[in-house]
Image 1 (cartoon, protein in one colour):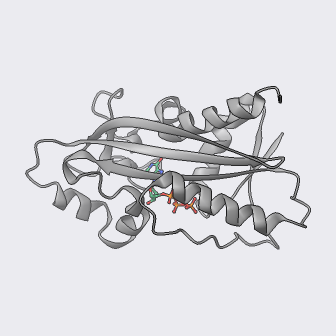
Image 2 (cartoon, protein in one colour):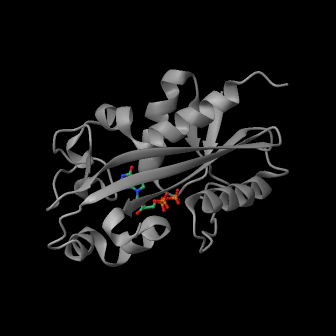
Length: 197
Ligand code: ITT
């Protein structure tokens, strides 16, 4: 079954494909007229609200197109740092683009409590139903930038399970075993496979 992923982030498409293809899904980036559709990210408190709003926008964009009857996926994620009361959370993209990873490390300078988590909400629409699932990956913020795989905050996030290695020091398969994205996507894929009532 094909899943059209409405995202501007090619790294997310690659990861989603690695996670969902063993489960029998073919993940493709949603392109309309060859372009990534422009979805407005509302200034909302929660990433679930953001994911659902973006999914609703994407659903209206595919109405009347060849994609109308296909499964459509949106996923919104963020990094939540406990000592910063969950910042950057829903503002993670903006913060990455403005102060960047070194800016986040500066905010954490001298901070002993480095606990943090990545969260992802996957929202999927199929045959008029909307399903959502949340995934969490707990860990901590590193003291320095390390590793060059992955994307985004990966070089400063150390999952609990990796013996001090950041996500950017993991192979794609290692990251997918424990990532917020993987738990969220597997969650929606299970909902999709439920027999309809
Ligand atoms: P779309 O909204 O177009 O899907 P995006 O990159 O803006 O793409 P998000 O809003 O979901 O995606 O991501 C919020 C921020 O969190 C952004 O800076 C990402 O780079 C970062 N991020 C998300 N998942 C991540 C991951 O698995 N590893 C590292 N950083 C991640």
